[in-house]
Image (cartoon, rainbow, N blue to C red; front, top):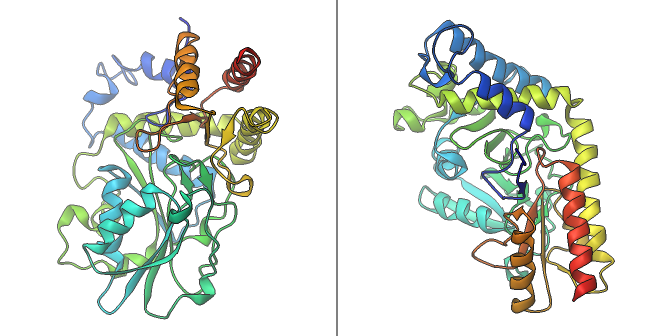
Length: 360
């Protein structure tokens, strides 16, 4: 079977090795006579999967013991509400750095919960860069500072992060978690929908400093309180068992690749391959993001005209490439090159881009 040249922004490519192992267990997992999605979430067989996923994530990201690892449903979009519901107290303000559409949506949800402040923004420049921001300027009543570490639509990414010495730092890492080395201690809460680098859609990972759990009010709805998940190992109700199983397989695969440093090196190489084509095209391909803010996960670009972009995407589709159209809100072109996208697929795309330029 020929695998598609999959550059979808999410749900995104999964490692072939993971899909093959999952396929083998769809009918009979661990000699139970049942598929993994048929097992009780209270069974010892599923418990082993659940615990392995948490352990592998802790290992790969070097998550300290004073952090909880939670598995929640609802995607990152639900976290736009859960974060302020749990962390934003009376007399406080939540500060948001706007670097793309998702951070803007997170702000709008927080506005419904309490007071918010736009700490910095690049919106008026069409989100072409990560706005400069110093957390030293944040006031004492700030509940937290929220950032989106990578912006799938506009193709920008934080290279360094604000210091959180005074104010808790919250990061939506849905599209670049597990793609590079970082110090979890820099953050107080990290959340990420799984469907980019972690696995399939259906499960959201939340990594939260334990002391922050004290902020959550008992008056919150049960399923919107982080303590519900922390107190029951994310097993208060039926979790998305199949998604968590696939998450555990992706984490096992990432560990076999050599961990985050090796994955980061590969991702840097893949991104350079495409950005070199853009930079050396003499303006034929026009990158959206400023060079110092470019994402290693989502390479966004345009061509000279809408008609030429349309022709590029049509010929790319005919050549077997999938998912190269830009987000519906801005158009253009986008290649999402998450962890599971093979280097060979990126090289094929680079060759196609070069050939298309030469013909046009």
